[in-house]
Amino acid sequence: MRNNHPETLSDKALRTYIRKLCGFRIPGQYLSLFRLVWTPNTEGNRKQNNERLSFLGGHILQSVLAAYLFQKHPYANVSTLEELKERLTHHAYLGRMAHRLQLDTFAPEGKDDSLMLRDCIHSDMLKALVGAVSIVKGYAFAEKLVLKQLNQLESAIKAIGGNNPNYKGRLMAWGQKNKADIRFKANKTLKYNGKIYHVVALYINNEWVANGCDTTVKDAEQHAAILACDSVHLDFDIS
View 1 (cartoon, rainbow, N blue to C red):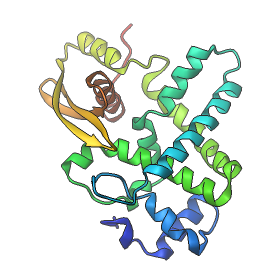
View 2 (view 1 turned 180 degrees about the vertical axis):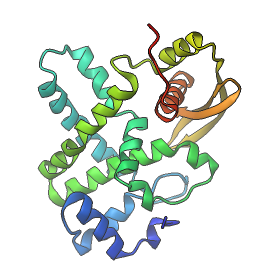
View 3 (view 1 turned 90 degrees about the vertical axis):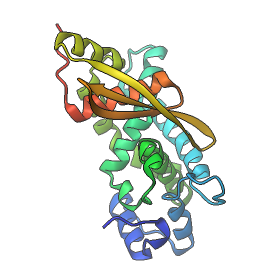
View 4 (view 1 turned 30 degrees about the vertical axis):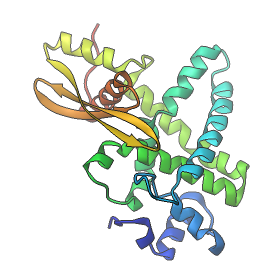
């Protein structure tokens, strides 16, 4: 059952989840730290949230990814490695990883605006979890936790987009081939963690398919295209 707020999560449920996912029991003095993982900064007056943990975990994730990509792609140039790292750390995919790990099970239920920011919020929760684990168990332990998930994440990206990260371009080409009307419509802007996010709706043949959300309209369109490719399972064979 979904919890309405992280404060309602029992100590037993939290410890059980972390033990199954990470392989250790949370020491009593760190329970409040792990509760912050599920406390997003969606309210401007919230004094305690996961922003600092997400900052720490995000940098650990970047460091682990850099080493992982360097070793796995020995002949790739720097620009290719940067592109791969950017794709792997996109909130659409980190949010999907968080969902696969059931991090969102304990997330507070948000308003409609929060739902549009869902991937961003869940991505921050994942990074915050990495940060919390590193504080309790150290960098090496957090690194192993990240590496355990990376092969699945990279495979998912290849399955959806192949070697072409321009999902909007591929979607438009698919639309031309199949005589489908593809439209993007900018709906609104939202504020999260001190940044302005643009929400863009994607329609196929006048039917809503997905809402994309990012800090620019262009990136929000890409986010919407990613979600469409993933959820609708479009055939991108345009040869």
